Image 1: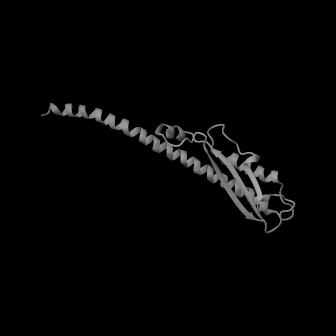
Image 2: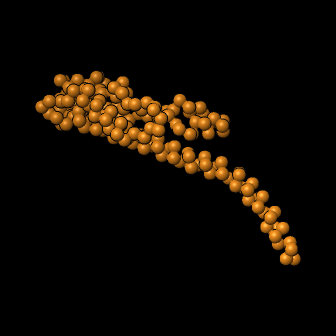
Image 3: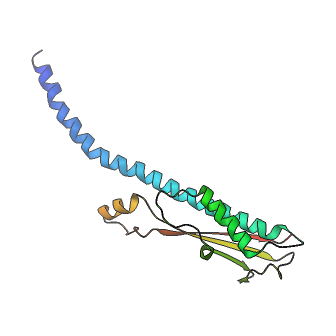
Amino acid sequence: MLHSLPHKLRSTRGASMVEFAIILPIFLILVFGMIEFSILFYDKAVITNASREGARLGTMYREMRPPIQEIRDRVKSYCQTYLITFQSGHVIGDSDIALTVNGAPYDPATFKDGDVLNVEVRYPYTFLVFPNIAAILGGADWRSGINLVANSQMRGE
């Protein structure tokens, strides 16, 4: 009876390796998926805060409203400081920031108290790991990324 114990221990080692080989890819997909989508949600929050910064700047001053470029620079600066990008990817530019008042382009000279300034920021988020995993599993093709959009509206003071 004592001689059969080491034989039983030896036979279970192979089963553990097979179980580990099956579970490891699933575990890694879950971990990298959580990291990937956490970064995506963080970047969405960053562009939302950047649009708020721009809207606040554009509506704050009564005497002299800031020019369009100053608002865009504030938004770009915020995004450059806080966005998480591991690749040389897309940088927020002037074309990614839209400033409108009641559907018309923002004009600091005609903007008055009570008008609502809308600041829209667009950011094309590129996935790091997830599109390759989705392609392997036969899912959607997300290699080109998705567009994140944030809007903030503030009434002129």
